[in-house]
Image (cartoon, rainbow, N blue to C red):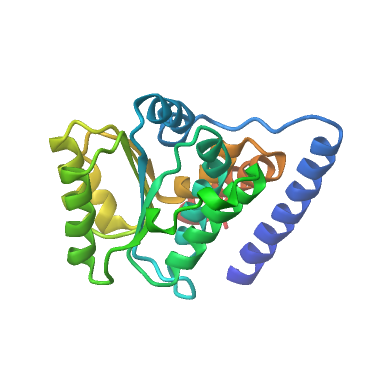
Length: 243
């Protein structure tokens, strides 16, 4: 039964991807549901440029090459989606990472954005900071940035646990607006009361689509939503004893 369900999901995914690809080639961009945690980011970037205060991207502690890889890659893709606009405004973000594998990837995103704009000499690698691998040390380091440096808005996206509450509390104390997208249950439980736009669980993976608006990301997101509905239906049928 499990193999049958897996085969059904894979088959639906392939057919849905083909269908969305055909629609995109015909000029019909997929429509997706709004997510405030991501939809506010372009506006926050504009306000950041006006104020001359950077956005702070907190990318979490998920190592690339572990079971947290997908969450970290989704966070990096979201950063990538805003990088070109940020450097065009001469307002590159400040990025805080909690794992060594994230450091060169985040640096490369900003470096390539400056290269595409034709100003490679403006790239400042010091804007990407490796805070520390210990979760509490990382959270304390990010909280210190929020408390002592001029930051317009805080964006927490990636893999992190309950220590995230220490970070968001520091931002709230400074009146800094926040957008949060995390996938781990300990973090969601700790962050639920936070005053922030929150994307929970698999919504984290919608970041690149909502920020860039590129058809390939929007199509992938539409397929994800379809598969989510199908999984819910299969669980419901299993509960009723029909499947």
